[in-house]
Image (cartoon, rainbow, N blue to C red; front, side):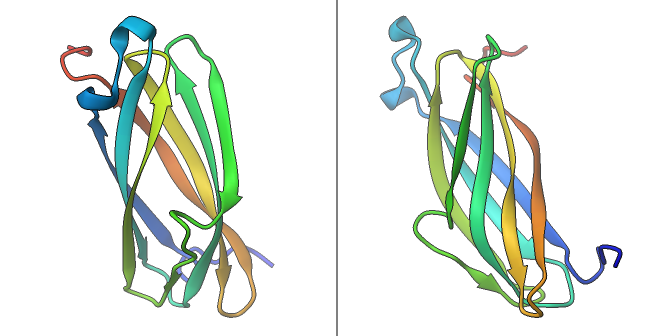
Length: 128
């Protein structure tokens, strides 16, 4: 059975902020917060079951993060509903990237992934 992108459609938008107060560049410790908005653009309700992140620094070192829910929650989104949360990560370089997916379960029982496109983590003024 082909995947129905009209029915199972989760949009993920990301905003990143560098946290200067928690970062220690002299020790190669750069902290970023990211605020994520998850919007159900599909035609069926769906619950976020788990997350999978791949975090990469400028040297190509990757961290993989998997776990249940987000910020301790498993939001259930009806069509048109959204959920916003803020979390954070630390990397060993002033620039890096994150990407991943949320594993979702639709109210009809279908499991599907909501892809999170790569986004940049960058200390301000580091990229020109």
